[in-house]
Length: 300
Image (cartoon, rainbow, N blue to C red):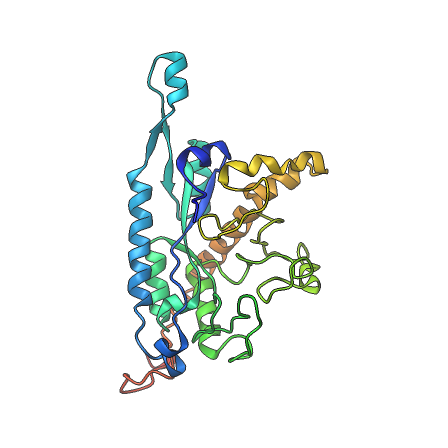
């Protein structure tokens, strides 16, 4: 598969920040077993992905602009990546002409049925966890990928509601965004969003993290086919949205404003909950067979 992302092309595409996906695929149904109880090493693999991403961010803090060196006969250093864990970090990265680098986990199957794992990912710098990928998990139902799959929980499981409660408390993004969806009316597959849902965009406080509208999410280096004239990260200027009637406010939202607004709001909610004394969620998966007692939050 041809690659879509490297430092020169990020610069050419004027990318100011992005999420490094610490993605691990869904396990097979036979591997995870009934009620998701078998060990599938998804947490271990996610930790390794986090380690690789952070290593690359630290490995390339700066690059030389060779064209400027040739013209001006001196060395000019440009910072490349800056690890970001807050909306303020993202703004600072852009001000410093760096590329803000955040971490995102793509599915509750990477949590090992454990809300405690969510907290540890947060402490390692992860700032979004999608509730599902293309498989159900202990927290929530997935719609599938190309073909709709039958629901298991009819939405969120009881543990899933607790997961979102803890996401709100610590400041982890998830329920306010679609990260990997387009319009179902344009391309009718299960993971795309129907028009009756899209019509609600802009009427509340959420952000739309999907491919072509509220902010650009391209999934580069995670897809095999790309749109014409948008073959890699260097091609973002080809969108030419000003010529299509967008004004500077629309463009500001698309290129980061919408995301930063929601990110800051999530941080504000977390700060408010913690300042009010909200306690960590210690609920455990009720189907676990290794617990002598099924402990709930109220017993800890």
